[in-house]
Amino acid sequence: MELRDTVAVVTGGCTGIGRATVLALADAGVRGVAASWTRSSDAADALVADAAGRGCDVLTAPADVTDDAAVRAFADGVLDRFGRVDVLVNNAGTTRAVPESDLDGLTDAIWHEVLDVNVVGAFRSTRAFAPALREASGAVVNVSSISAYRAGGSSIAYGVSKAAMVQLTRNLAGALAPDIRVNAVAPGTVATRWQTGLHGEEGFAERALAERETVPLRRTSGPEHVAQAVLGLLGMDMVTGETVIVDGGKHVRY
Image 1 (cartoon, rainbow, N blue to C red):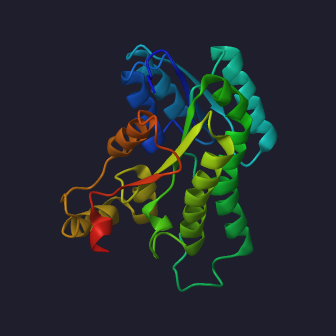
Image 2: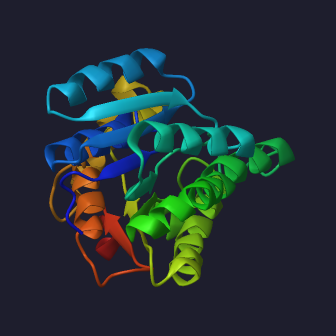
């Protein structure tokens, strides 16, 4: 897939992995990107400015992926602005930190919220943009997690949601073929505010330092490394239904 002069959509695209992906797409020559957000209006403004410096027109809009009407309105707005959509990156996600052993703490409300954002939200977005993607013979990349493959992480609900996203990727790859390719990336630990929000600045620094001793590449991933994998999958014209782990090789030693 040649990215130059195409149009991309990145949900949750104004911070962390989403932001890095938008800027990587801009550097690859994408002419327009639509990035949705729910709480980051200042980050959205900063992203527009940074992308403009790379020659890319960025539309940012508040769009809650748990609200189907909002997702469809976002899709309509993107098509009004750019006239086409070639790429969709389902990056919007959420979690709640609940210790694995605290079964009572993992309430029904938390389950519904996490699954609604991480799994059904990705489905809603794909469904809304599917007609445009089909017309463009486009591609979808879902952002899953290493938590899809191993126990642990911020909560049981989060890991289950990300495992479901891997299966959603497979199912959508079949459902949308042959016109649209669907793949996923599964990051391990990534140095973003997501991690510092869960563990604090000092806590995350300590965890990352300890983890690097077990990671074959001896580095902590940055959001730009996940963005590299996203763009890599976009360029693989005969790959669909696959998930690429991005964790410096740690998973080979789990």
